[in-house]
Length: 120
Image (cartoon, rainbow, N blue to C red; front, side):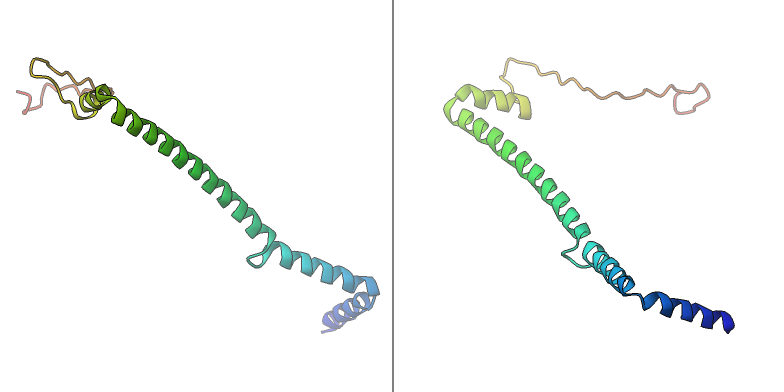
């Protein structure tokens, strides 16, 4: 009990000084502005990061749009482009042609064990 009274006396003595109140109010205010609420500095940084992500996404979609518009223009004005797309994407061919599809897959072939009944 005596320790508690001494502690409270020390707090009252420190609190009675005029500059301590201003320091405490300033620290509490900075914490509130910096970390609490939707207009805090942390929220501001999160919003800025999200805006940068969205700007990158807009650039990606604009690039994709330009490529698609270029390809559409080419398809509308060049009949050879239609044939090239049909051959590349849909594996279409003339009657006298053969198509070989080459794969880039790097599959590991499993060796068949000698005691495997299915292999015999």
